[in-house]
Length: 317
Ligand code: R5P
Image 1: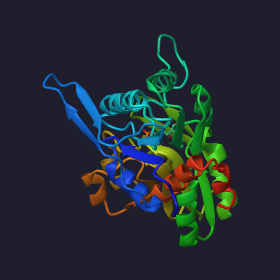
Image 2: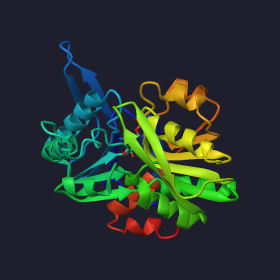
Image 3: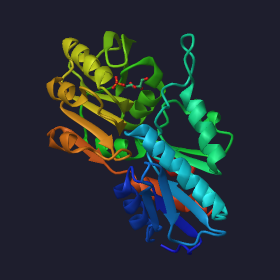
């Protein structure tokens, strides 16, 4: 693949395996940088490569520890800007703080907007993200956002499985459009779970709109955090006669009780991507599969660098 040395990719410490896989796809070497701490705990980054006038990308998922990874991304952006990079793209495979995207009660913040603001202020000229919690988050940034969808890798995986008698289920109303797209791509019926969130970690699946009796189910979501959403939905789907239950989600956050819940739930397979590096506990669970978004990200970076269309990558899912 021909890419001149005007393109530079750097990695924060959240997901170096993904950054290396992206560079492998592009046939380039990961940019050198030394990430260290001062004795008082402050982080410091020193670039080892010249970036003056270059098209620079820095890959960082703002996953756990969220604040530390976010701060590291901000320092990286500042560092690249002050080193005279020509254009800086923040590649954020998993964008933490995204779910606080509105005031749904009094006296709460909108962290998605706050984080978008500080990323821009720190020096990002563009953002490349995957499955932001809601599409409208693109508008929280006042800089261009290329928003990729994990559908590209997840649909291809589930298509190859040739699941018969398929129903695609959205685990809540917020995800209906995505589920409808999966149903269109894979050729299945559509059903929706009406859920009620009781607390940050407890979810109640109340009702299913649509028929899942005797069907094999693919439930798709953007994030599995505590797994309350997918596990309570899976329980209700079984009660309503679903056969096999597969889950497809972009981001495997696996927080709190998630892994125990997934182990106990009537779920045959959970498929996530490597936007967040899978932890050792998750790898031990036999029914969790991790697909890589490296090629999709690498292809998008190549196209952004060459000023080519990114959206056309999704024309033939
Ligand atoms: C909700 O709007 C999201 O799409 C996910 O369903 C939710 O954030 C998953 O969280 P948890 O796994 O903790 O239920």
